[in-house]
Image 1 (spheres, rainbow, N blue to C red):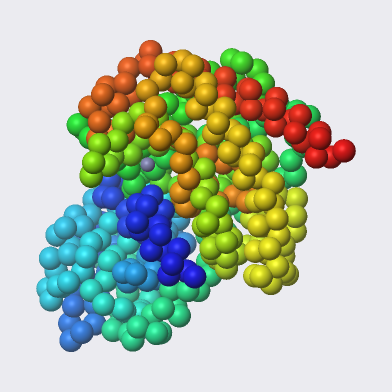
Image 2: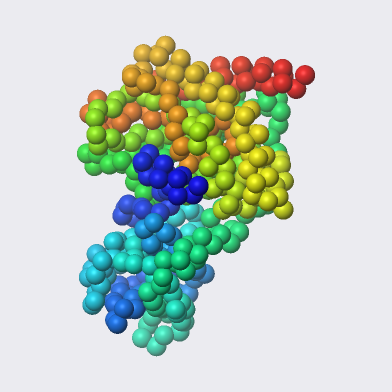
Length: 414
Ligand SMILES: [Zn+2]
C-alpha cells in the first residue's frame, strides 16, 4: 500500500517534499557552522567516508530514506553555507551519488541529504569533539554497502518522538464546537527554505506564497471573525506532516494551503481549489497511522495504544464528516472568486492525494492561486491589487462557509 501511495505522490509531484529537496539555502541563523576545511566525501574500497567539520558539537542523528536510497543527517542546528556541495561530490572515488544538499528545516533544525549511489548503511557514525586543529567537532560517517532488504528495514524505522513533529504537549488541543468561537484558520504558505517550489523569472513560489499568506492573514483579521496562524512565518522548510501537526496544535478549524506551482506540460492558468481525493483516503490514513505518534493525528481523540487498523478506522470515520465540509468550502471559495471576476482554471474544483490535505478531522483545501509557468498568472501574483482582490474573495468564501458549516454542525448535534 505504501508503494502505491508513493507512486501516486510521484505522479502528482507535490508530496514527499521531505525527500528530494531543491538546493536553495533559506534564511538561516545556525548555532554551529560547517567548515569547508575538514569536510570531505570520498569512497575507498567500496566504503563511503563522509566527514563534516563543525564549529561546535550539536545534537544530531542520521536516518535513511528509500526509493531512491538517501542518507539524512539532522542537526540542531548547523549553518551549511560555507560548504560547496558540488565540490564535495567530486571527492576521490565518488561516483554515482545523486546529490548532496543541506539547509534549514523547521525552526531550529538543519538537514543534510545525500542521495546514495546504492543502498548503504553506516558502519560507523560518531561525533568527535575537541580536535586539535581548530575543528571543535567532527561528524564521521562510514557508509558500507548494504543489501536492499536491510536498507529498507532501516529506512522504515519510525522517527523518534520530537524529531519530525512538535512536542506532544503542544498537540491535541481540543476544538470548540463548530460556530461557538472565532474560526481558527491555519494558513499554509507552500514550500520554503530548502524547497523553493516553482521558480520562474527569479521568483520562487515559496516567496510569493509567504507574501500572499501574510496579506491574507491581515485581510482576515480586519474582518474580525477569525483567529489566523501560519505554518511558517519566514523562508524555512517545514515538512508536510509537521504542517498538519501545527494545525492540530493550534486547534485549527480549517486548513488552507497556498500554492502557485508551475506545469511543464500543457497550459494551465487560473485559480484551482483542491480537496483530498476520496480514493486516496485509505492509503493516506494507513501511511499516517504507520509513521506517527498517534496523539499527533487527531485532536481530542486519544489513539495511543490502538493498533494501526483501529487508528485507520477512527480516522476514516472522522473523514466521513470532514470530506463534505471541505467540499463545501471549496464550493464557497470558487463561488466567491468567480463573483469577483478572478480568473479560474477551466476545472476549478479538483481533488488529489496531496499529503498536506491528509488531516482526517480538519477541513483542508489547497488553493493554487495560479501557475508560475503562465506569464499572465505570474504578473497577477505580482500585482498587489490583484492579490488584495484574491485575498478578499478568500475572506468572503470562508465567512460564508463558516456560517453554513456552523448551522450544519448544530443540525448534526441535534
Ligand atoms: Zn507548490
